[in-house]
Image (cartoon, one colour):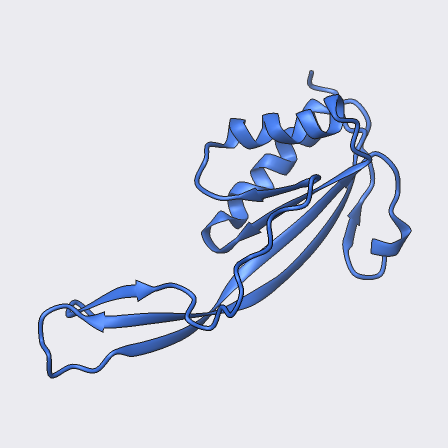
Length: 141
């Protein structure tokens, strides 16, 4: 693979990824406190009944950390619904120097986590998600 370089990340993407909904936060390259602030703003200032946090691939761990910090800042008042899955991605790898080598397409699966935080229960998510009830105020604060 040292003779190859990735040139396209998602070869099969026929359409661009849809923009996030007004209550959706997609975890990517920014720092964790930025995402925590965005989530808290949606819940507290914009009075959203629920928010959706999405982490894909290497950002799954960061999404979980953001959720735990938001729940702690909201003093255990939120219901959490968690869904996990995967998406297929096809990458295009082209040779860097040798013209004799062919281009290669690699298909791989990326993990995805979708977490709903809600002030109220969402009965429609009960059957498709793991549900964590509000914990109440943290005893260590």
